[in-house]
Length: 142
Image (tube, rainbow, N blue to C red; front, side, top):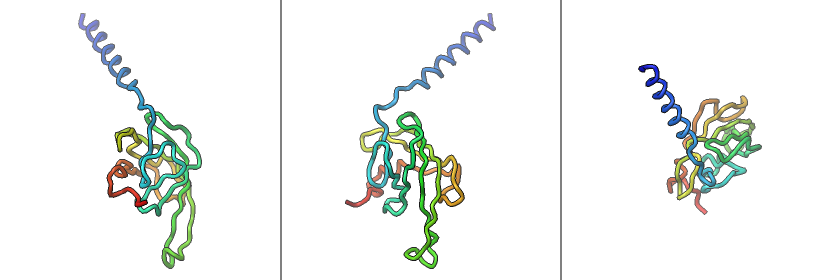
């Protein structure tokens, strides 16, 4: 009797877990950046002044609860100063996750670096809060 009750309880928990994982996706999921919200952008504007832009080389997948892209980044060594500095370029694979609301649309709220070349500006495991771009202070001036 106890065993049967435990089996029923375990089955109920499994059904709840499956139904929770099948939440319906929003119709379209956007990426918030310093330039506003964009669907499947070609460029990720990481800094609010537009100085740090990442070029999306390829979207591995997009539109689900997560999205994954390969991006190219530029790093200025600012030697002897930033105007005359030398640029090196790196490649990263990033995951966008945590769907939240921003400006009335669904957006990916977090960016996580999955892998990075030696010359990329972030390391694997680094996270960026994309939801901060929903605040007026981070929107680029026209």
